[in-house]
Image (cartoon, one colour):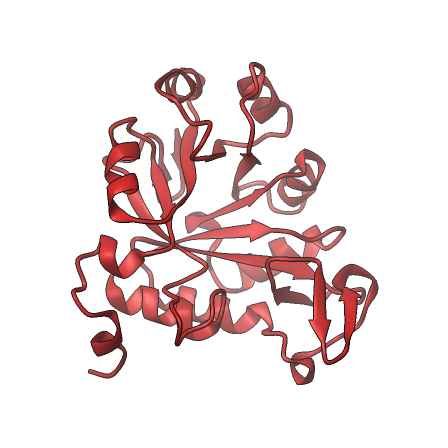
Length: 238
């Protein structure tokens, strides 16, 4: 399946820097984590994106965030960088400069799909991005606004009708929790012409084990270890 610069199956499982290259000193999903993953040589970077009530896209794993003493549902609130939330534009600028790295844009929002398409197009990332998400209807809306983008349906439980669900929402790939991925699942998606990506491994040993199933990519929380960087902290201050 040809998808711009993405073609399934990929030649070997790519290591995806899950929420960037983060550790105790660098926060996950931060711009620094994304830039560090690129600098380390990651073939792909993943980060999470939500929308605020006014359509602004911010980098956050959860719709509910805590600012000061209060918690907010991002989709019903207007917040900005002054509230400590990173705008997605800066992350996309970093990815745009890394032309050999593909992006897994994990969509956690609701109702901001038109803006997703606009920003990916503005930054020239349409051909090397997978927009993933758990909501099939949201993926349909993403492709309605940007038909050429690759989308991936995220699942955390085994579904006998997974291929049908992928097709119904126009997705070209599935993003599968490591606990339910299997050789049979990979084979069925492959037969349908789709890609298979696995999330999220905590160590290199698990990555190696899951690689034997031949998925297209595996998200990892230890990208430096996976890429063979012997001292992550030394790499922060060359």
